Length: 185
Image (tube, rainbow, N blue to C red):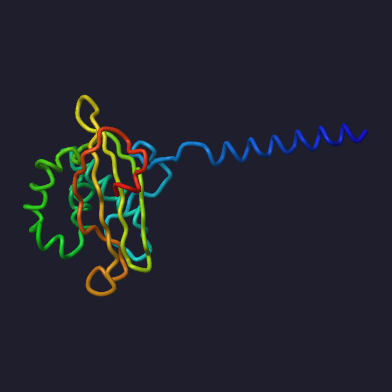
């Protein structure tokens, strides 16, 4: 009788270990444009204190994706990207028309109208008000991958006070997904 209880307990433990292993060893789910579901709220259009760094990045990536569609409303495309740019960033890259032209040119062109995007790695320090992400975008007819770093901050004063905004975006050269994205971002 004790052997039967032991076997039942062993079977239960093995099942629990397998369930936990499946949960923790599954590949990380990346944020992709095609993952959007119809009943999910659309991405944010402008900075707000309740938005997290990932939400800001995804709003900008969706805006960049929409900016490649000439039929998309302007307020869902490059305007969203501009809205989330930090004031100092806008001061250097603006006015809006210059910012728009700059983003559509090399080296940022792969971002505009890209097919999909993934957040490969995101780090943030809410106490310091900084965040950084490594992003992969799939673009072009051959579905090439381009990598970018997104740097965000959360100013404590000014027009963007307590809102996550983008300070900089810049391309990085990677041949494939890095083995340790934390070393790059």
